Length: 363
Image 1 (cartoon, rainbow, N blue to C red):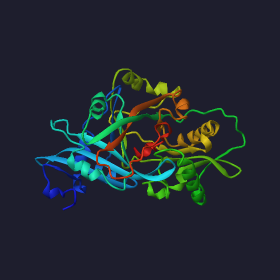
Image 2: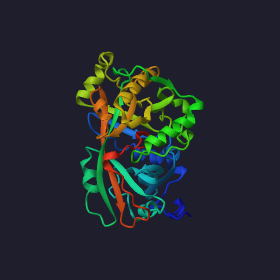
Image 3: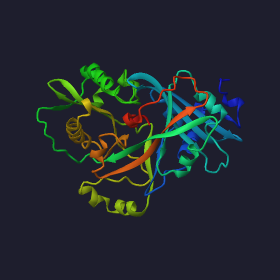
Image 4: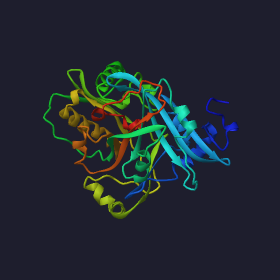
């Protein structure tokens, strides 16, 4: 058996999930949609275990069984990120879910903690939907084993590509990347990315499932990269599915054919997953707003050739928020939590809450 216990020897307890658990993990993940005017599930079809294994870095999936029925799950996605300008290792704790019919507790048990706390991990964090008051109350209670601190709000936008910014710059070139641009792009991503805490260390584009250098776009001036981002379609292994519209959003869905002609987001049908790319790894030299707007105008022209929408995420205090909050969109607010374990073994680094920029496609 494994250090954390093999499935055959710990039925009724916590254990490391195996490929055979994939369908049951999916059932748990989809058992409790996010409520609100749009009932949404963030899922990992067709097989949750396989989906987690496609995440860059190291993915560890935990499961809890009760009488041979999977009743809870949680995952740790361990990756290299920048903290204080240095390459560090962070564990993003996600997918904490339990079967609604199970009255017991799951998550952060003794077994989970033992597997999570490692010498090579410098920082632990997670995210919670902003209006999930029950979970926020639970996370902020005193706990003898760990301390959880809300550090920043994070906004995920679903946007239509049918908008264009007027910019002052006329001598800038926007284009799709080519294979020969790879080293230049990697150098830019890491030189600018290291200025942001929790931005991923990117050593090879192909380390990210389904991503290719041709998915990147560049804004240049006389050959120098001023901004870049990738259109990263992840829908073959993780998706957003709209389960139900309520209230005004139900009315908006009914009138959507007319509203979409006026520039509003084309809303998907219920029980259909959104087909979209993430606008990922979006960085501008020195956080220049003119570069940001010029790049967005260019990349929107590319997106609308294939898609009705795209997704981008950022902390609430990020400079790009001022541009997006004025646009027609659907947005979801979450809170990022820092996690400190009592018996933490790593360097216990703490990122700067005013300078966070975790990649939305990796959350």
